[in-house]
Amino acid sequence: MKVFSSLLAVLLWLAASRVFAAPPAYIHAVYDVHKSGIKIGTMEETFTREGDHYTLHSVTAPIGILALFKPEKVVVTSTGNITGQGLRPAKTSHRRDLDSNKNSDAEFDWSHNTLTLTHQGQRKQLPLREGTQDRLSAMYQFLFLAAGARTANFPLTDGTKVSDYHYAITSGPVLETPAGTFHTRYLDDQAKPGERHNEIWLASELRSLPCKMVITEADGSTMTQVLSSLEMR
Image 1 (cartoon, helix red, strand yellow):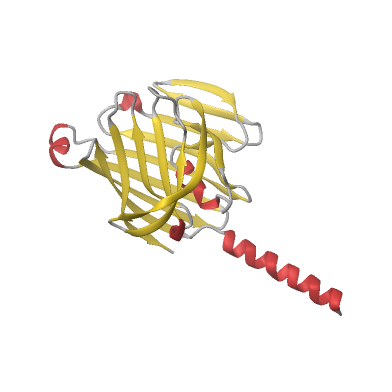
Image 2 (cartoon, rainbow, N blue to C red):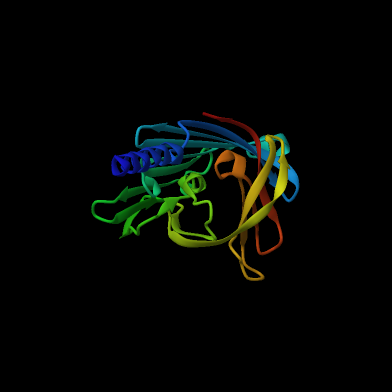
C-alpha cells in the first residue's frame, strides 16, 4: 500500500509539473519602441496556443514624426509546435510595407533537418540545428527557461542567415514599466567593445516574458523596447 501511495504521489506530481510547465494559451503584449531615448513606434505581439501548436503575430508601427516620413509597418509571423523543450518553429515570415527587398521567409523541416531561407527571390537550404529559433519565437522561448538557468544559447534565423546567440543570465533589478513593476532576470550577450550589444530583462512575475530589451549598436546608438501593456491567460 505504501508503494502504491508513493507511486501515486509521483504521478500526481508529474502531472502537476506538466500543467505548470505549459505556456499560457493567450498573450497580447504591447511594447514602446525608443531610438536613442526618443519614442518612435510601438510593437504589438500576439501569442496563441492551441494544444501543441502555437501562432505568433507581431506588428511594429511608427509614431510621431517618423510616421509622417516613413509610415511603414513591419509584420512578422511565426507558427510551429510546442515540445518538451519549448517552441519548435515550422514557418516564419517578415514583411515590410514599403521595402519588399527586405522581406524574407524561413521554413523549418525538422524531419529532414533542413532550413530553407527565401530572400530577394533567392532560396537556399542550410542544415537545421536542434533548438533553432526565429527572431520572434526566440522571445517566447524564454517562457520555457529553467528557473536556475545561468546561460541561454541557441541558433537564430532572421530569414536571411543563421547566427548563434549566447547569453549569460544573472539576477536583475526590479524594473518599473508602463505595464507594471517586475522582478527580473538579466540576459547579457557579453559583447566585446565595438560590437553590437544585446540585453534582455525577463519578468519573473510573467513567467520570463521579456519586459525590456536594449540593442546598442557599435556607434553607441540604442534601440529599446519596454513593455507597456499586457494581457495573459
